[in-house]
Amino acid sequence: MKLDKVIAKRVDKTIYRYEGMAIKVFDENYSKANILNEALNHARVEETSLNIPKLIEVRMIDGKWAIVTEFIEGVTLAQMMEDNPEKYDEYLEFFVDLQMTTHAQRAPLLNKIKDKMHRKISETGLDATIRYELHTRLEGMPTHNKVCHGDFNPTNIIINNEGIPYILDWSHVTQGNASADVARTYLLFHLANEVENANKYLNLFCKKSDTARQYVQKWLPIVAASQSVKGKPEERDFLLRWVDVVEYE
Image (cartoon, rainbow, N blue to C red; front, side):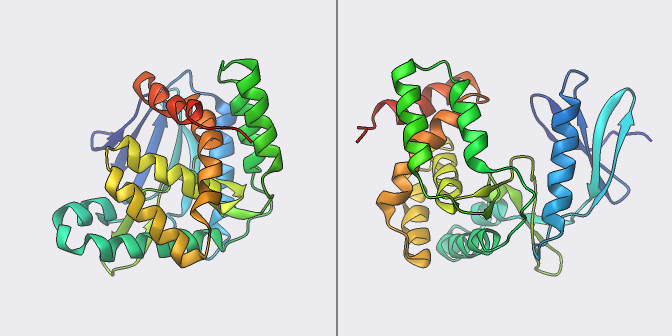
């Protein structure tokens, strides 16, 4: 197997296209447990009604672990937004509808989002008082069991040649409160310096789902803190500012 067509490259993994497959090859020092957990979570989401690439296998390639899925031919929603700015609002509405469809799914064996966030908050290195406030706020938030993608953004939505949307990259999926997932997407828009679109997205989601904007905003410091653990240094600084500006009740 000669892997030479790179689809995407990340800090600790490279994704290749090979004969109708997408092959995500992890660095040698990447946690085997995390790789197997990602594949398992992907398989669990496959059991919902969502359109996602089919998991084919987990294997070793040149001494490195790899997750192999089917390759979806098409265009990302992010590219469509960039190429057709006059249709941005239409695409954003489609994006929100797809996220709400995701939240309507159930996969009871997925990890719980609160458990993951409690663990991440403990790893932040923040002052003990701030960590306590974050843990307390998180524990007080309503517990739900909705499928939460964890990295829902237009680059992870691909429209195939038949016009069918597929959702990619389920490495961060959990089950829990949808508003935590929305807060994460809102922060992703901010990280991309799309402040106006972030607010447009949040307003649209809250309107369509009949969710109070303030409710989603209560999740922002929790999500920002938990996400800061694995972010790039510049992202960590940005995310922690969202933690610092919050007045705790």
